[in-house]
Length: 328
Image 1 (tube, one colour):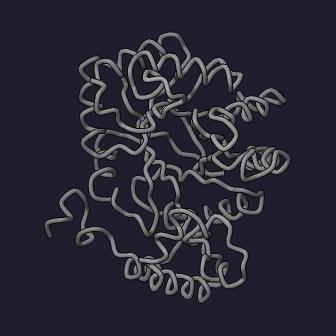
Image 2 (cartoon, one colour):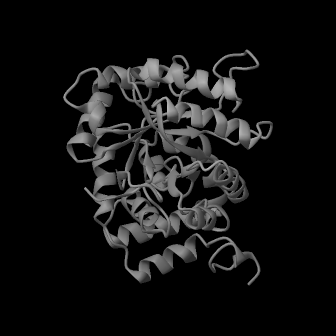
């Protein structure tokens, strides 16, 4: 397994982060436990979840599922760098969402209980709260870190200027601030190259791309649709994007055929190769999908292949370094 530092911190994480959105929901309990154990056996030490995951059963279910896995012992909790999230509504009550100090602290306590752990390694803001001043947010996060319940703070779905604003506010308080940012990033959706990645590089923030295969769109969707084996790639954002990008996806799958490689492996290898990227967040529904992501980590894409991929899925602006790429 390859390891790297989480942004500017001294914390080491695997170059693949195991996302848990599908565990215990789209993947059965037995398969989900096998995915977690296989990931740990291969050295994946970074596991990501969120307080609302498992909403198909009830909000908080995925954290409970992970808590049950940790309870099996064998050093599972001690070996894992655990991330969870706060922001989304957990009920219809007005103070059970957002980034108020009240909700941040209460949400952390609830997550600790569900996860059956004493601490969260990376407590992530799932979205910016436009009503919460940064002094309120950082006061709550400082309280949790002083109590030993949170080790680091991360963000998700932030704009570049949100990251800059948050970091400047944290610096004024002599607080570490954000150490990681989760953003949607893949060949089809490259917007973060303009502002988010440069902001993260400037402030020493790790970039953790979620949906690195765009909901299955980059995993061989056309072939799967033809064979009738498409599952996730026939739903949600993948279907919507296919309407717009069908020609590019067809060209992509032909390129993968020519390389003799699984499209999912190429898509993942591309994300891993991007400047500033620390660890893509994968969401396997099977051990086989997890093993495919592990193979991608070993694949180096030649410059000519990277060039072909840029032709099929052009970078935003003129392809220069952000944030000036929009200009020339």
